[in-house]
Structures are given as C-alpha cells and as structure tokens.
Image 1 (tube, rainbow, N blue to C red):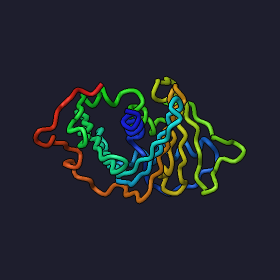
Image 2: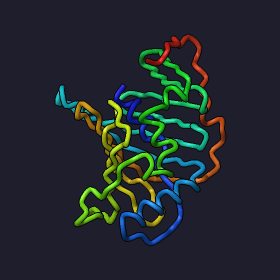
Image 3: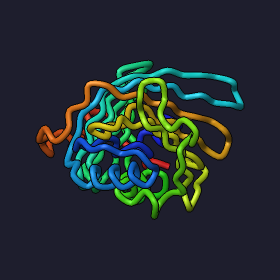
Image 4: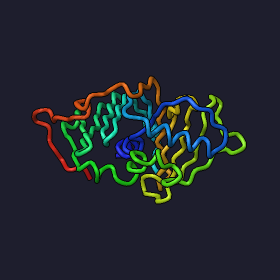
Length: 217
C-alpha cells in the first residue's frame, strides 16, 4: 500500500522549456509554467521505501507513463511485478502473484496526496508552502534545485515532499515523500521522454481471465 500511495502522490513528474532561474520565486514561477506545457511522459524509476516502525527498507524499480486527464501507468518489475493503471475514470492495482486486481473510482483514489501532484505543480504556491531545502545552498551536488514542499492541507500519507529539479528542462530527478508516521519513499527518475504522444490505450487495463477483482481500500 505504501508503494501505491507514493505512486499516486507522484503522478506528475516532468515538464519542458529551457529557462534561467536564480531566486526561489524564479524557480517556482518557471516550474509552474513548465508543468502547464506537459502533456505526457515516460520514465524509468528506482524506488526505496523506508518503514520506520519496522526499520525496513524495500527497493523497487520499473517504468512510469503519465498523461494529462488523470491517466497513469506504473509498471513495477522489482521486487515483485505489479501494475497501477488509471484511464482517469477508474484506478486499477494489479498484482499477478496474488491473482488479484484492486479497483476504485479514479477521482476518489487520486484525491488528497495524488490530487496535489496531478493538478498542483502548476500551482505550487497555492498548494504548498515552498522553500529551498537549504537556502544558503539551494542546489545539490549535481546542480539540481532542491525544493522543500509542505502541503497547506497535510494528509496522513503526505506531510512533506522534497523535490530535486534540474534547471534546464525542469525534469524531476528525485522525489522524497514523507508521511505522518515518518516513513519515506524516495524515487529517482531517468530516461525521461516528454510529450512523445503516448496513446490512450497505454492507460487501459483489462483484467486477465480468472483474476479476482477486489475494491481498493
């Protein structure tokens, strides 16, 4: 479930448009403008989920596809295969090893932590309290701007979000999601392709024969 929440929280991750930003206001303005131009994207990702109460770290990796209109597809290849798919109307979480697919109405499933990302990166100042993680040194060692975002309406699954954003095409390189239990999910993104014209069929899920359908809770 931690995997699902983190995935939904990060449903929009990249945009395009070279600019030159220096101040926090410049960075925020340019990110908001860039995200408004994003239609679709594909990226490979690696993920590390840390559960504080269990002192356990679980790695994962796969490929993500996103498109405006609430369409998303996350394909996890490790540690176990799993697909999280939405056409903007319904959300499916398919786990082949369980022979099970969970389903929910997408607007409901994507509310809260996901909603801020699906519609909110074009309105950073409206949705989040925004600061540089380190105002004295706002870029990391790789030259990415590092933003520390606090939702103005925090949720159990999203109390803080740290983004590392490169300053040329405004691609999200790294995202760290914090929840109220001090668990974290860290994602890194590579091989991004933006506005490549992903077809809508990419975001359609048809349950294989014999798969048990269970409401997503």
